[in-house]
Length: 336
Image (cartoon, rainbow, N blue to C red; front, side):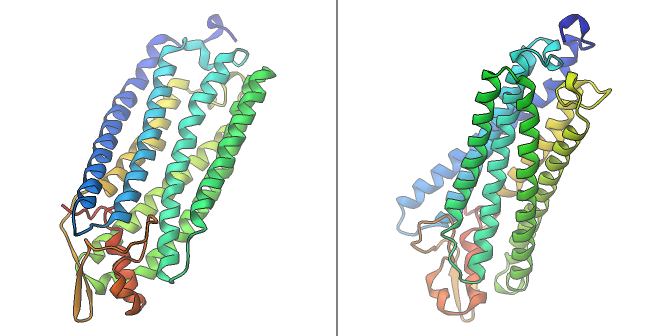
């Protein structure tokens, strides 16, 4: 392909401008929340009364990952705006490889971001049963490492062999498998946690229903996002067009990307940011005749713990109450 054969025009790039503005604003939001999380963690370390450190740590990690994903997508859009219009249809030059790389890196980062949420739900699930979840952290890092390693190895091989389009094909295939597996894990742990915590959240403390609602919303939104991404990869593989780098037939590639960025990345990320950044009032956790403020937490250094060690011997219901309280920052109930 070459520029004379392309039906694209430079003005078509304007379709990406609204997405670029949206990702810029979302990145600023992530940066503000990261700074806020750091400030609250520093305040906790200087205070004799600790806050929900595990929840704050998890929320900060999630916002850092989400911020990196959003920034990578913004960088990819800027690159796409800077390349000649025919580059999106040229499969015989290194531009095809570069675009595939620029598109693939944000996709992988978004996958890692939502796999962190899967780890969150898995830890909630195992903690409600009093089981150890120490294996989840190596599983999280190990699985992500394998995905990234596969992508890097194939990227190197394809550029050395000048099989530029092969990276695009491999990326869609890899992401389809990863998103499908992540969707299954999200649904499994999310649904089980929601069912397990529902009766306890409603009876343990006043804000339990609010947090449970956010757990359900977070699970549904993440699952829906993963399903859309899985479907996008399958469609891109099934409707493959060698001369359009996997773009659907008869559709302007810039329009395809603009819609995809909005539906697959920008809107889901913004809703998740809202759920995890919403500020709410302080709450208490009841345990029979005793009440514990959720600002207390255990000495466990992992992201999550049952928290409130006095409750650990008071039954599973108390453990679930403490669990929700200690992780309330990640779920949007933030201490002021």
